Figure 1 (cartoon, one colour):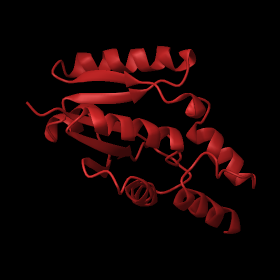
Figure 2 (cartoon, rainbow, N blue to C red; figure 1 turned 180 degrees about the vertical axis):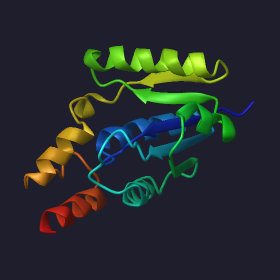
Figure 3 (spheres, helix red, strand yellow; figure 1 turned 90 degrees about the horizontal axis):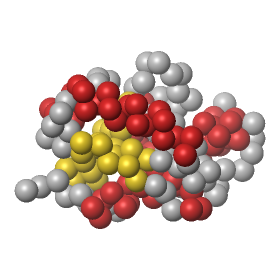
Figure 4 (cartoon, helix red, strand yellow; figure 1 turned 60 degrees about the horizontal axis):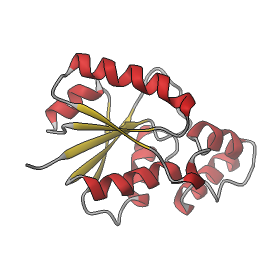
Length: 160
């Protein structure tokens, strides 16, 4: 039986922490879909097509990873694409309450889709997209937190 997973998120931008989780998930599952949400509830720094493009470039070497955008309930997207597992990352205990609530809501919406939590390697536990965005917008150096193609895209925003 094939095990296919979805790793959903805004990925605004994709960080080394995200990449770490995708790489480890790719070793556990037959297929991993990195599903990048339009997320109308947030105002992303980067447009959806840019976030998708950056993730594809960063993850290009993983043959069982696919990157796509989406604008629907995660469980609906997963069901339509035959994805039986939702991957969520936990950086710290502070993430747990929200992620636990989200996992329970997803289980309520779709009993046939399970949530699996992964923790990043220790060097990535403090990295978040929101902190990377803030550092980048204020002209700080983000090279330790993101892939070079992401760093270059963030530098373009400062120049604009």
